[in-house]
Image (cartoon, rainbow, N blue to C red; front, side):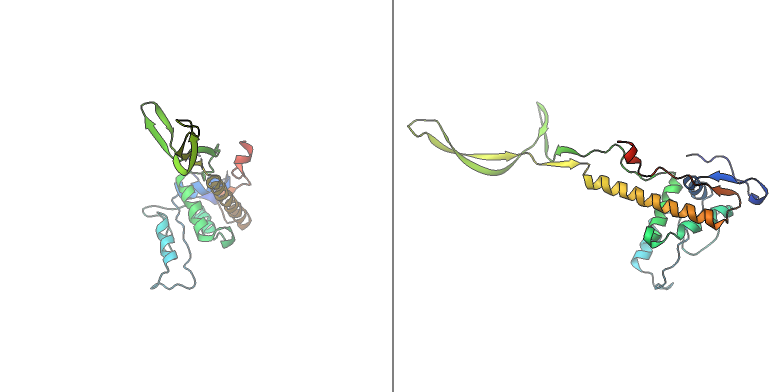
Length: 223
């Protein structure tokens, strides 16, 4: 998604540019370099940061905590700052700070969450061996069995043989696909919240956020 056309700094004096919420996020974080300001947890002081809070700070390059208003070395459009502030307010019911960081990271990279399009679980061997005849599935001994084989004498002879099995797995695992698509759906729900907040808030001067959204549950339409 490209956002090459600049948005006027004098937003109130020119026509607003209509953008879907994903395009607006990419403009704010990728083009304008807006930074995500995460509020300090109420039970943490400046001198004593909890481990989770420290990890959240380190989790994303470009995120900052309660400091500064503009990107280093340049001006950040005020609409971009409003969008970043809205993202920072994603409620805990939709993922809170972690989701805010994820939304900002994806927008800054111009990416959509990977929902593993076309992924179908396939049964594959867990052991693969190669020899002069090619590649083949490996086996393991899972037990033994005694059998009687023909030989000298009326009763024949008894022989112990190994029972072999080929261990298999599913790749990708159904749980991997489910987790990826659940992550996409969570991101989509968060974008819907951000979109509604920006539309209802009415604080944007140069950008008009439309009702357009990324496709919901795109894997259902790809079957």
